[in-house]
Length: 197
Image (cartoon, rainbow, N blue to C red):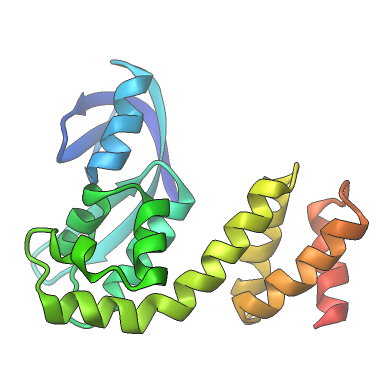
């Protein structure tokens, strides 16, 4: 399983980017949001693209994102019945990740229905399935952006969720820790949060 691919941009268009990593070119499908970010880097620039690998019978397809946040939203979208990777990519192309999260959290069916290939039933299903998950993610991101060391917060949160703790419980514990100790290291945050769970 790939986490990210780092290399120079060999080719870039609104549908995909080719990243040259030591002479090996990875063709990665991207959303328009990621395209906008990659264009800003310029030709032959070094890019750091987070990836999701979709394994099908006939192909292994890579989907790329310029932020972990966008990849997490993509993974949430494809967990909804009837939403495949290409549809999720179209949804992510329709609006920035934070706007989509707000739309799902507030039940904005109109925004989701405006995406090609997403009908009323699918839009409703996305909202029903993801509303609670998005709300906890939005809360996490609010905490993270207010926190001067949001990267440490995010990494500690990711570690705790990988260990099997719920995102909501992990956020609650980490929030308390960061309020008391703003300069806490990632190792300390994880160890102390584990004691609080």
